[in-house]
Length: 64
Length: 295
Image (cartoon, rainbow over all chains, first blue to last red):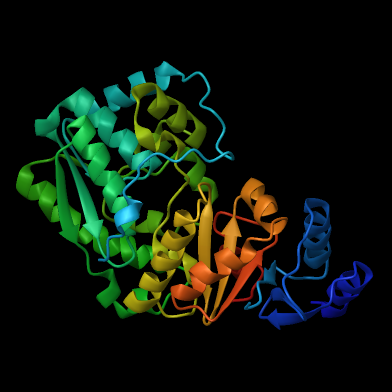
C-alpha cells in the first residue's frame, strides 16, 4: 500500500489532510475543518487508492 | 431489543433501486407449482425482500394452514427489520412464529471468523427444524435467490446440511425479478435496500457482541432519521465508524456542508471518530479484506 501516492494527490488538489493507514484501509484525516469533495474528485481518489493497494478509502469528518 | 419509535416505516424509495420492470409471471407460476409439490412449508422469515416475497406467494398458493413464517430474533436482527416483517405478515395474512435464537452464545460465532454466517444459520436451522417436525410442515425453505450464489455465503452450507431448500435460487429468481414480482403484488418490501444482519458490519476477526451490534443499530437508525433512504451500512472499526452510502446520496452529502450532522448522529451512538467511505456502499464490503488476505 502506497500512502505517499494518496498524500501527493491530496496536496495537488489543495486538500490539507494526512492519510492514516488501518490494515488495508486509508483514512483521510483533514488537518483543519471539514473537506468537501466533488464527485469527480471522489472518483479520482477512489481509483488512485485502489491502484495504491488499499481496499477502502474514507474521509474522516472532524469534530466541530 | 431496542425498538426505535421512528423506525417503523416500511417503504423506502431509494433512488438507486430501479423502478420494477415488467415481471415475468412464468417465474411465479413455477414457484407456486414448486410449493404445491412441497405440500407445506416453514419459511425462515427475516422480512427482507426475498423471504417476504416467498412468504406471500406461499400463503397464496398453499393457504395459511400450510405455511408458517418463522422469525429468528437476536441482537443481530435489526428492530427496523422486525417491524417490517411483522407489517408484511399482518398485511398478507402470513402466520408467524417468533423464536429467540442463540448464535450470540456460540463462541465460534462470537469470534467472528470469515464463516461466521455458517454458525448463525446452523443455530437458526437447529431451532427451526424441530418446529417444522412438530407442526407437520414438510419442507423448510429460505429466501436465498439466484444472485446470492455468486457471493461469498458460508451460511448456505448450514442450509444444505439441514436439508433446507431455496426455491427462489433453484428456480432462477434474480433480485430484480423478485423486486418486480413483489411490486406487482403490492408487497412494500419491493423497493427496500438489501438488509443483512448487523454482524455484517463488524470486520471478521473482531468479536461480535450485543453491545457492538446495538451501537451499529443506533448509528444506522440515527442516520435514517436524518433522511438517508437508500443503501446504508455503518462499518464498525473500533472507535471509528466508516459510513457506506449509496452513490447518489454519497455525492449529495459530500458536496454539502451537512456532513457534521452525519458525524454528530453517529457519535451519539458511541463512536469517537466518523469517516465516510469514498467508494460508497458495497455489498459484502468487508469480504474484500478476506479475498485480499487482510484477514
